Length: 103
Image 1: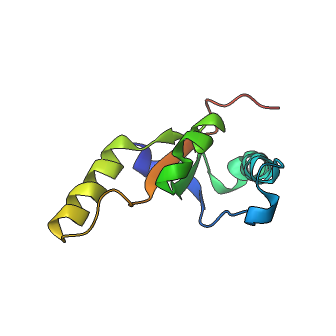
Image 2 (image 1 turned 30 degrees about the vertical axis):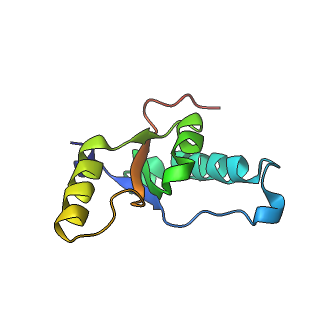
Image 3 (image 1 turned 135 degrees about the vertical axis):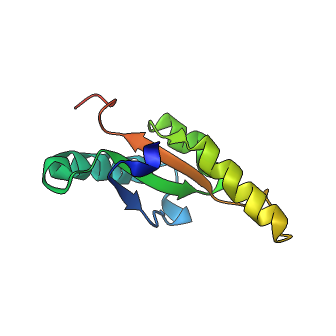
């Protein structure tokens, strides 16, 4: 399972709305990937994980992230059991440094 592999988490990533569309988010993600690549041998990191807002999933997919389908299904079940909305849940995603091309 991907959950047993060492990783780094992007906890919060945001660009002020005034600067949307200028490539800043893409640059921040690229920098995060570059940093993880440079540290992976030292800290035993292979994955970058994040929780994407549902409306940003396609954007993160274009950056090379994939959905953690099983993890998301567990989140949806837990939210439903607690009577919470499943539509607005953040989407668990990961970027595999091993599969990615080095720049």
